[in-house]
Image: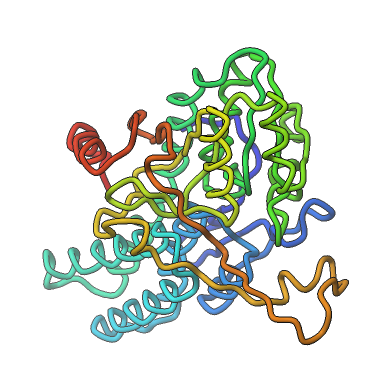
Length: 362
């Protein structure tokens, strides 16, 4: 497991009776504050309010949420399983777009049910241990997947390039060193010098607040731009590649990511700039045929109406606030995964790639 990244967005402290420690991303960059989630309700609130965010990060957190749900559950196995299923529903209902959350919850459920089926004599302590071990496996696998994504994608960033990124797909969005930003970290570790243009990412400014903060910690040159400056930056020949993360990838390669990503993909195509998506295999949702089938989370209008507590929209004006958009596969040059790179993503290319990827397939 790579040890070179020190920021830990997610960390489980203790054993079965422990708790989940999260960086409160609502407070960055002004304050580095950690939250100790000691029960399921607290974790669900942290996910809903985006104290923890990023598709892999909320997936890993949800896995540990299943551990929290069973703390103090008593000794009745049937009751414990019922609690686990109820917790699964609560966690999956927190945010609908990122598939990693449901994937992690269902994986923990499968491990729990598999234990009961294989061992009729199993008790609640055995169940809790199986759930805990599966959550820990999901956490470890994400750390390792982030590192592999960075290694596979690092050669795409050459000396002197300018990389444009959107939202935050770094260590704060995962259990490891990130997805899209992992590529940047690995290229930097290999001694290359380049510039990262960071879209501020309205309305919650995850680029300006989080990605810029991460890159500053790593001493990588970053330049923050307003979202509506990206097209002109490209027109000036100042962008070499666009690199983003993903919250869900449909079977045909259509990709949901933070709102504003689709605009960047269209602009990149117009200016003949490669557009790369970086995501672990757990972000692929083969049950979702195309991007049109991906549920898009609608968030509260207050996120747009206010910045830092200051109201910027007149009273009585409606706000439309989708958290994500969908980029057509044909606009994506390649998808960088923890098992390699999928060139020209399409249903056929993705299926062939996943067959070859073997045991890493989710």
